[in-house]
Image (cartoon, rainbow, N blue to C red; front, side, top):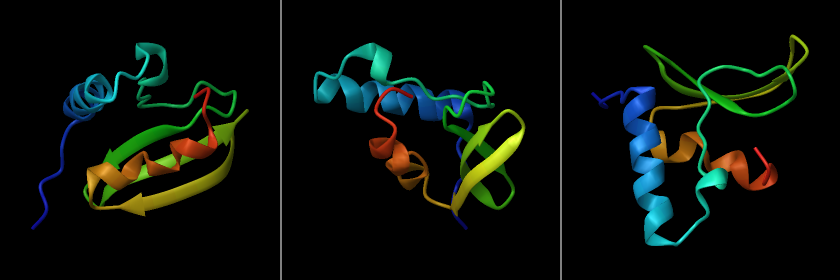
Length: 81
């Protein structure tokens, strides 16, 4: 069984990875809910991690994975998220 990490643990790991590559901190945000403007966020449930893009209540994309590293891999398409 794969361990499911909390959103706070994922945020910490993203910051750690970001420091290794000298990424600006404003590019390392990990949202747990939609802001309503199309900014991607990660939802965590018993099935794993869901990378979700929604805007004004309409969901445009949802990808599910059990490996937390791939949950935010789609962010490359959204550089200002």
